[in-house]
Image 1 (tube, rainbow, N blue to C red):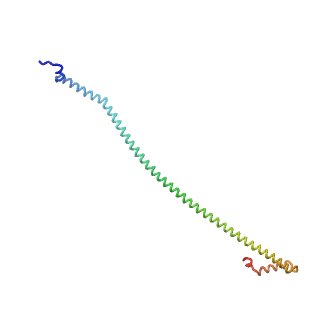
Image 2: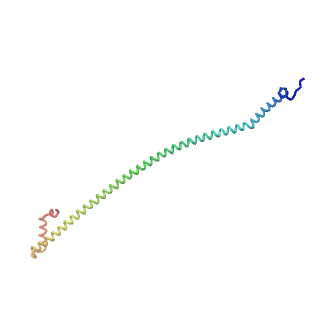
Image 3: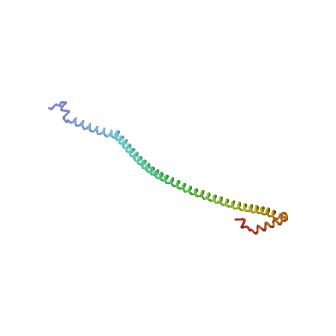
Length: 177
């Protein structure tokens, strides 16, 4: 009969080899499912959690970027408003300064008008005083002349009556010219 040598058995398919191969295959499948349950599933879970974490971080980053973009637009709008408000404030200040300038000019004109009016009144008073002084001087001169002309024969009452009469004849218009 046929004897088996070590080399034939390695290459040949005998029932023992088939039996061992089937048992090894079953053991490999059992080991694969066991290792899959113990190792692969936790690794898959870790990878899935990491994937979810990365997706969440990307979503958060996208939300933060959108928020930052909205804040940037808001700040740019506020900056434009600040510039507009600054222009409005400057314009209001210019208007207020112009109004104040007009008030000061009006006050100065009124004060100048009061000064001119007061000066005119003072001039008028000085004019009247000068006329009165002049009348008094003329009266005194006329009195002296009449006294010299008439001498001691006319008393002071008659002398004053003559002066008054002369002044009346000359009239008021003569003194004011």
